[in-house]
Length: 217
Image (cartoon, rainbow, N blue to C red):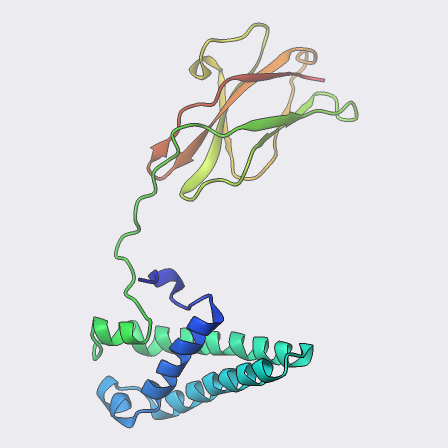
């Protein structure tokens, strides 16, 4: 089943198959009456869908850049028209049941989003320092944040000696975009900045990453 948040097919041949179903159903006077659809809106939507199918056929017959651009423009217009009609006339239409909506590819929204578990381990990281920016350290988490992750938390401290656990680091912060920037206080240049990262999501937090350190320039 296609998810409710992305019910429009990504593959063009699958989209064309769904468009053909829409063309038939929206043009049917009995369906318009049964579902309370406005005939003029159905006619306008079908015209937009037909324009896409016509442009698609033209491109398949003659594969030029011009035909491709026309087909893509018509495809985007068709998708926009389908989303509009679905939101206004199908998704919350009390005269339609679930199977009738699904015939048109419009699946019910999940009443509650499926919980996304937090990764077990914290993210990898790298640091960046520059002699042109004395006293500053940039910390970046590696790779994109996983689905369901709200932020990356950082435990940190400019210390004279290492600590055994991230829980022993004195400060906490969180960031959603790279980089996180530390600006040292007076007297901290030359010390080591110790830090560890973990993910935070709706379902909790991951374990802390290993503690890393970098000399504050």
